[in-house]
Length: 319
Image (tube, rainbow, N blue to C red):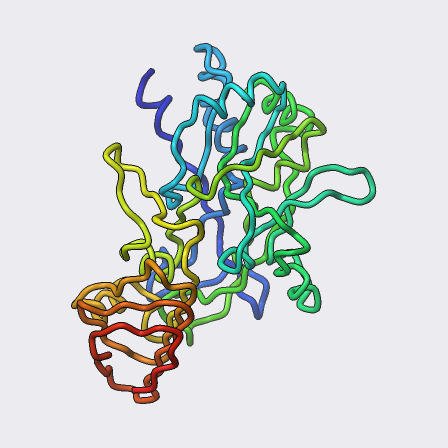
């Protein structure tokens, strides 16, 4: 294998001004005019770069693909053997949804033909949000751990003139993600998991929660750095419990890593026995703090206030 076989450079797309529906202009930082086109771009990037043909030519047929922020996504020879024996072109790893996963994409079957599909929250109308987030109705979510058969993938892309026909997702953002007052934009993206609906022989497999440990937000990072997780000898991140705690930190003060770390310099609280923690306002955490059950901490002031160390069980704390 050469470096060209190991490094895939994906494309970028212009952000769309939500007011004019034209590519946005941001002279203060032109790089912010562009955005990633979503991980669904992996398919045209594989074909357009020549990597797909090179790998097939060198005898590589199967691939395991996952989000880089999913620290539980590791290679499994058992799953590989299952995928190969199934003959499927595409296989998605799914896990049982909990309260913490209700906003993520879930697996479904299309009523018209029984085809497996992936529904993302951005695809739903506002009036459908409650049903979308009902974990008893839609029981399995997409971990975005995917298995691909390169030969069948190439054949499908040839059928559609070099693409996989994925649904387009419109995400509303601001041109500067760190400035909520900057110009509103649309980021047009596709999701690689949506390809499940493009293959008639696509499959899904239910996997343990241990194969899904994402770090997409500071809520996830806060939980990951606590004692709810541990690092194994082979450097895999594992939960110390069946499901992760549900964490909701105030976006105004904790949305960005540097802000969260400033308020948590004394250490992340113990969350091993915590079901849910909600933090409103700037709260400073110190070592020796433990949460159990369902707790909330509120600081109505704009200045940070320290939470006294100690054990909090099913408590609503106002500072």
